[in-house]
Each structure stands twice: as C-alpha cells, then as structure tokens.
Length: 275
Image 1 (cartoon, rainbow, N blue to C red):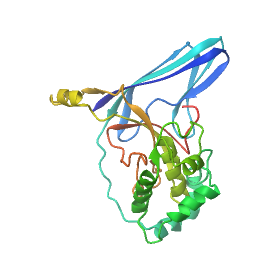
Image 2: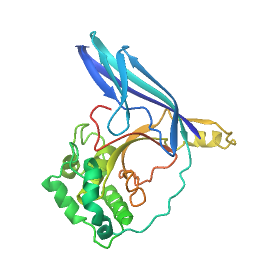
Image 3: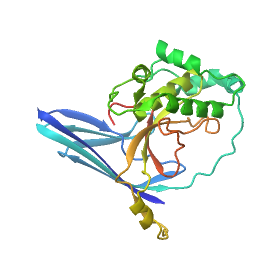
Image 4: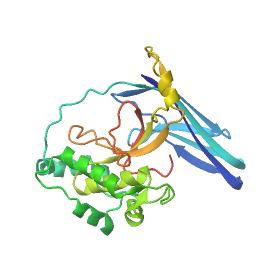
C-alpha cells in the first residue's frame, strides 16, 4: 500500500527575523516494512539547504535564511510504500535473563539506556519507576506492555498542559500532557529497568470518517495511494535493533502498536527540539 503524506510546519513572527538556522527530520525512514519512494521539501522563503544523515540514520535537512522575513513555512511531501510486517516468533525472556547481558548492552545501547535531555533520571522519575518496577521473573515484553497501559490509565491527554521543551518530570507534576510526554515517561521507566528504549516520531493515518469509509468500499487496486494529508505526528517508543523480539513498538498515549497505518519519520534518544 502506498501513502501520500503532506506535513506542514508554519511560523509567523511578531517582527522581521534574520539569520535563521534550522534543521528538520521529516523524510520517512527506510526499513524492512516501509520505503520512501518520493520526497519533496518546500521551504518559504527559499533557503540554502544541505542534506546529511545523523548518528541515528535519520535524513536531516539543514537550512539557513539570512534576509529579514516575517514568516516561515516548511512543507514535506512524501510517498511511502508500506509492506505488511511478518510477525516474529516471540520468545519469552525474563527480566533476570535479559539483564545477564547488561554489561555488553550498556555499551552498545548507551544512548537508549541512559538519561537524556527530556528523559532525566530525576528523583521523581526514579520514584515512579520504583512503584512499577518489574519482577525478575516477569517477561520483558509483558512488562513493557504493562508500563504502556499503566501510563495511559494514570495520565490524561491534555494539550496545553506541557510545552515543546518539557521533560518527563513535567507530566509527573501536572498529571497530563501530549504524545511526546507519554513517550518520554515510558522511555524513562524502561531505561531504568535496563531495557533499551528510543523515541520515534510516527506519522499516523487517522481513523476514517463515515464518508471515507463509504469511498473505501471500492476495491483497492495494486499500487493505489492513500492520502495522509490529515495525518498527525506522534511520539512513540520503539525497541532497539539489538532486541527486536523482546520489546514492543507502542504509543503510550493511545495504547496501540504501530502497524502499516503508521510511518516512522525519525528516531532519537528523546524528542528533538528541532523537528
């Protein structure tokens, strides 16, 4: 199945700005289950741009605008092919068994096991982890699923309660937040348990309306495209490549497992302030 994704970020300034330097990570990643077949980035005012891959393999577009300007618009249009994921055989691994290789994993997965800018190992985070700490005999995947569900039940989805720069401590203080806050909290708990966890920016196709359901009753043809212009960027957690069979990809806010309806745009140790 092919998806057409259109993502726009706009800024309107109170007065003219100049010498604006920015980075965006909006090109969908290539993986075993998705392939970006076409990508176009439109930026107004038109800047000078360079493209490179960062440490985590994300495509980064860095650009600078020097003349004075009152607004900035960044539109990324992608066509992504999604392939059905073949479920891997899930082996049961207990927390105790998993941590036996902790010395090796702590080096290979350092960024995904330690504190980061938005996921501090603060006293509040450690207390929250201690209240939901795993039993040594508990299955790793079952524990990750339990944490995901527990966070969804304890905290409210409330836009405006936190900010783009908020850390996981803030959702613990105010009791609510948005996707990135739920993801940061889950990441912190899993890392304190010794389970590598990374932040993934996911673009999801919203549930269809009644009208779109009616139009979708027509048989789909090979190579057909679904328009994701109404898609939403969400924060989620992903297992690392070193442990794909004992962790889950999940959106703690929605308590869902990303499927072929979701496109991974970028990954990081925590949310990047610059998209």
